[in-house]
Image (cartoon, rainbow, N blue to C red; front, side):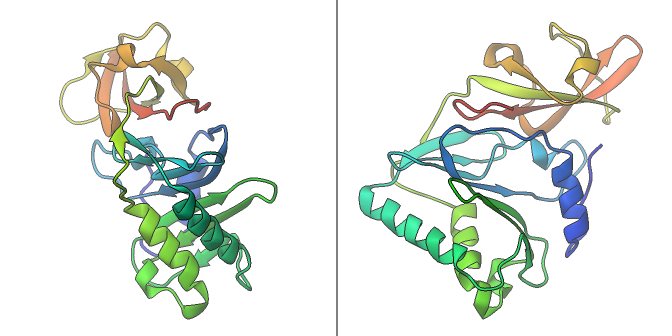
Length: 226
């Protein structure tokens, strides 16, 4: 079921994330997810992570509504990023849930490694109190990250999720080699199987006998394991 998160509601934001299939991104040291409001036929949770930084080499990924791009920070940029993360870890009073103020912003930041830290932030970064400015500035930058090294990557596989339900209009014939009921919590399918289906946040309506399903295909990062 798609869940819309009312502005300013941490509770509903956490509910939305509770419905996601947790994935492992080998070698990741920082992962940012940005949850946007859904709309008919659009499921924000089917988008790839907004920003992922790997532990070695400065490699990072940036996700959009369906596409994934990869880039690489140089040594100076990587050291600056790591210094900012270290500063955030030292913020006094920082908890697993923070509120910047009003606005519909929804962020989930995971700092991995030896001392994992997960922060769920709501509100707009520009409204953050002074004590949270380092965190707010990093979230704002990573949510709209750009870099000259960025290049689109070819997605090799998708996480297919099928929920009972129907969208407006007709429905596609179910064409995957397993029953829709086996994909309620997600099934990984190769890119070739997903080629003719909407991908990312765009959902499709599928028919299997008399049943109708809402199908999403979330692009997986290289090496990502749902």
